Image (cartoon, rainbow, N blue to C red; front, side, top):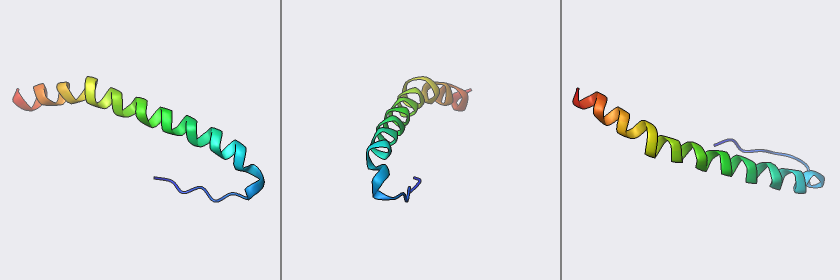
Amino acid sequence: MLKLKTPGKDHSDLCKNCTLVGFLTYFLVFLLEYCLFPILLVWQIM
């Protein structure tokens, strides 16, 4: 994980960015679990 070090004046923008990053991370994990993981299992079986 990346640790952002910014001044306190950018706190609101940082929170918005963290929310967006968290959503994108959750979306990527969702894709990995439900799309790529079964494909990897089938590939290993074959």
